[in-house]
Image 1 (cartoon, helix red, strand yellow):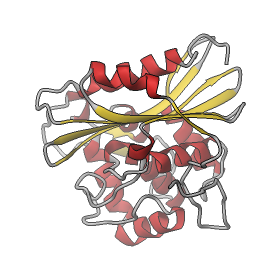
Image 2 (cartoon, one colour):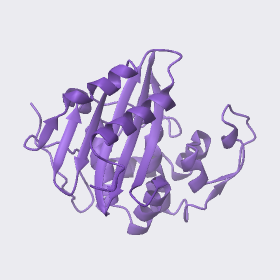
Image 3 (cartoon, helix red, strand yellow):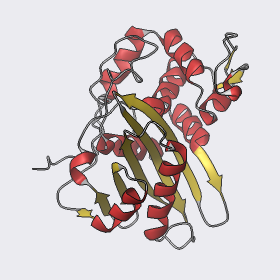
Length: 268
């Protein structure tokens, strides 16, 4: 049974869950996009202008997974809110350790680190925030299960977990300035999430990729805006194939479903 949930913002504490039983339509036709890449997953799509809420695999939408790099949304908000980062131009110097992602191996601003999803940058940002400060904000927002192991790995090591439904609630609240962060912090994070801008649409999102045992867990969370009308979406997938092309699969599934739903044409 789906628990009745809503987007209610208290003075400090907010619920991130998004599903409500009276407006969710299960879209089984989207299964073909997951089957094409041989993955299990879920996709949630909420059209804010008409209230239409479509979900593929509703049961999975209520399961919790590590957020991986989608946590950079929250980490950035806390860094900006606490003043650890004055703005998204905060430079954290490269630690000199050569990693497999060449774009990580240099000094980066927050904006640059967000775009290339630089894990070392955000690990250092979390260390500067500190465990006490981070826990305060996790508890205040009720982000997932709110669990911290080590301050610089907890969103990667399966300590912190969050459901796709909660992810959808987070990005919706971020868009409408309904999280308990300053409007400046929320505006700057939204700006970093912009990935595509055309005369027909603007696409905002953050990706994530982590491991739960043998499983590769992938995310894309964000929204697409056409004619100033936002629609919020979350993709979550998993594969046990060690050679799985996560980047290709998650992007293709997202674009295929949004295209199927009528987006990218500037008509929504």
